[in-house]
Image (tube, rainbow, N blue to C red; front, top):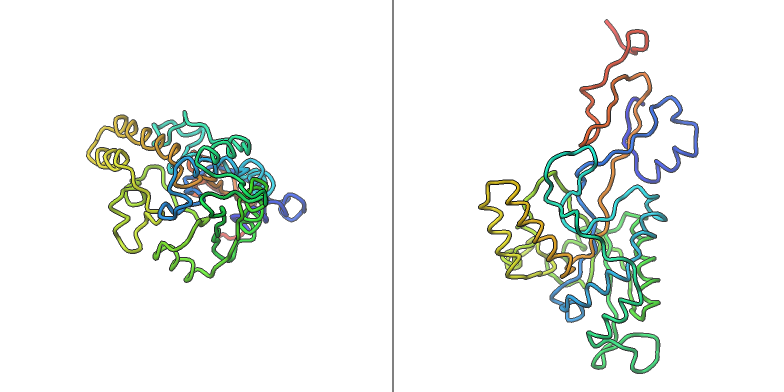
Length: 298
């Protein structure tokens, strides 16, 4: 094999084996790979309060998940834009001044109490107005890593008195739940780019569209206005200021718990020279093979 892209598990196995000794050191490089998230259906009574959604984010141990499940090969994000890397020197839509909400169960319980949630009958489950805090977390089938993530979330939420049922659905049924807006919470991902227009996902107009990308039914008038202004602002720096404010609002409202952006993993055979990691990854147009190491020649 001259070149191969590797999953996290393949990366781990390659590091423990001798199979890739003939390859360049496994290249780890950032790319605009989108982001993973847990979406809270804002139509559901459980998740209408932004304070509750922030509290739930404080219960998600993202550092633990990053290290235990993904081997440290993902980066925690706080919003819907690409955070860049130290090789990219362009202004970014991502607001790098925002720090992730930390894992903090005590703060989460305090916020939930302020929102009216407590254990009135001492059965270990939070309740409010006679209703227990219990929801389903949907995962698309086929990802063992995210099954493990769901298990960790379930464990940590139940320690705080929140019952979680983790369910896997085949893709067609999973999408139907999104289209019908009938789920409680889902784990999913959006693909990304260096720059993007988030209007389709976050503007309230998208709520009205059957199957629209704003499947959490998130609505904030200031966000709508910012997104509309950004579409009309040609100056990149001024436009990014609007997106930075938008990012800050999402951070407070937490319609999603933003999880991770991925990194690309690859192995390239050592017979190739010119293998350089650029700001957006590898470019095979850089590569060349010295004459004595070529497999094919005329």
